[in-house]
Image 1: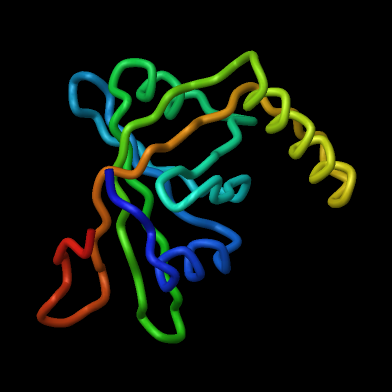
Image 2: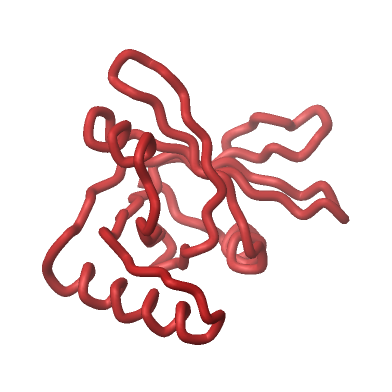
Length: 138
């Protein structure tokens, strides 16, 4: 497992939207914007599923996923690859559901978590333009 360093974690947490890429068992890709996400620890990211269809189907068939995020002003960017588990009951799911209910109240939106996607980080790469683009950093 890889660990986010402070620079990667800070950039991830500062982005309101990140991209989540998945693929079906047949290799059909899917990418969606994710706003309901947070770092649980340096090796784990939590994503709430409110509206996933293709994404959820892909994750059930193929638990490998990738996140990418960037700062348009500095061109700092990263790709994180990992494996996911889907929680629809238990402590992590209940905490995620409560978090999303609170978020929904704050923004006055009808959101409800259907599941907690626990993303365990395997690899981290830089995506910043230049000679090191695509280099593994952890």
